Image: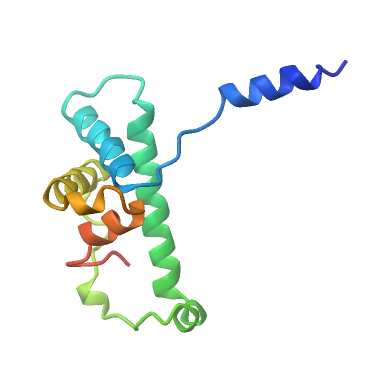
Length: 130
């Protein structure tokens, strides 16, 4: 038997996810991940997971952009020198990347009300991930 539509809508609302939209959202989520790294406990806080998820999506998008010549032409992205890129597979962890995001947010308060991607771009602009 199907539940009445009101109950389905209410169930959907309880499972709604918080979105990272602004630099402030990203900094708060990454601060939670940095705190969790210093004092790990289970379960991992939701905000910390959102920071990891945002960074995975950011790096994944840049990797596609870096590897696909058609996308480079579409977004007018320059061909980059692989030696100038961050080695994502290297010794950096999401916890370390989260600390960098928090630090960049503290030093650039003007990015707090901008889209979150601008804070990520500023954080990794010295050596962009690819």
